[in-house]
Length: 264
Image 1 (cartoon, rainbow, N blue to C red):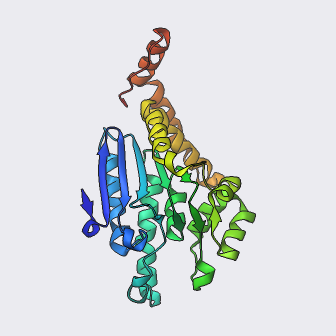
Image 2 (image 1 turned 90 degrees about the horizontal axis):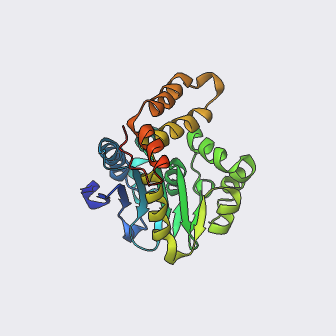
Image 3 (image 1 turned 90 degrees about the vertical axis):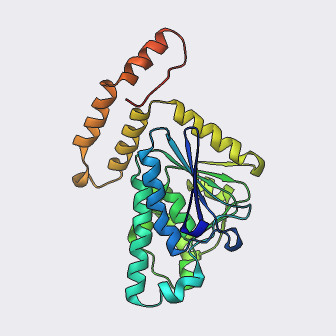
């Protein structure tokens, strides 16, 4: 299925939902309608019980996402009012991505710049090809970068690397991104898709309620202590122990076979 006049593609393959940024002629730069489509796609994947893992990637071989579509800056980010409207749209997309209850993987090849880094850091996991380039050139454009995006990066790489990324505005290699903790794994270009598919399958084969509870717990752990909803976390943990999947997991272990989890 396509969205945003074909600039966003959503399809499913077994347990994997694929969200593809499809503007290769602009290195998959994100236009406003692409931001708007993200919550729709994620909502559809969240509602589909067959989908257990969501993979985000860019069309073509040049880029994951090269940033926001600068050709729209005059119209969409030219005044304070339009900047606020644009930021709200992008924030809704990032919020939908960070809050979707299923695991998300960014499959990164080529340029991952600006808004691309924002999308990648909103995912649970990031797997990058060795030709990837990462950077946030806000300081080269005079842009103000919103706190939520800064904090998300700080949470991943720490304050010193976050400052280096923002202060210099330069592009970092996959090896550098791996060293600072920006990506989970760096692999040769030819192994990228196979690596992501293997990881997605491993996740999809595990108990969905357990995965969901861990994602919730980690999310709450990243909040200030006073804002944590530990009752929701405990409820999710209790749901695991009360589930049919828990019975299946124990039974499969005793019978020395692979469990078949149903997410209930």
